[in-house]
Image (cartoon, rainbow, N blue to C red; front, side, top):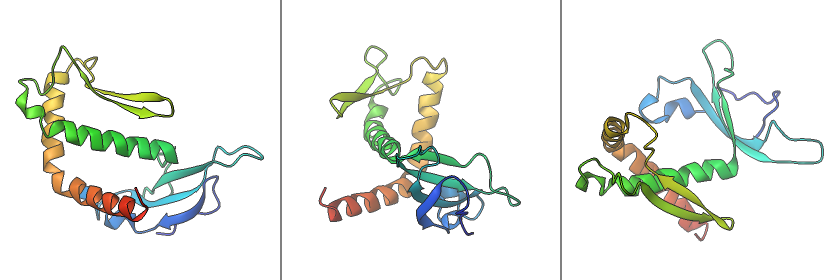
Length: 159
């Protein structure tokens, strides 16, 4: 499906067949495309770029389409990678986390650090962390494929 170019987000690079590769939702998703482009929140004289997931209801483009600054997309990728690494060994703890030390990592970014921790404010964390680990395991092949592609592209870029 063609991504609209008349809305506030101005696509520059697009993937218009995302509905065919949207993980377990492939072939049955409202996420019809991805784009990188000029952000909808740009002010006169200031240009930010963003990533956008374009959702379509079958009748019209959805207000639930998401647009994120590029650095946040990368921060989410970092969070996914660090969490996946954590869950490789979490099974060794009775609760899949240490209630006395819920910090997983502090990842240095821009002079400070992004804290990564188990969310013990969640009153259902003991159950939810097990469900999360189970879902992560079930999606392991799909996530692993994408991480392998990401790793290859990062190596090609010199990282």
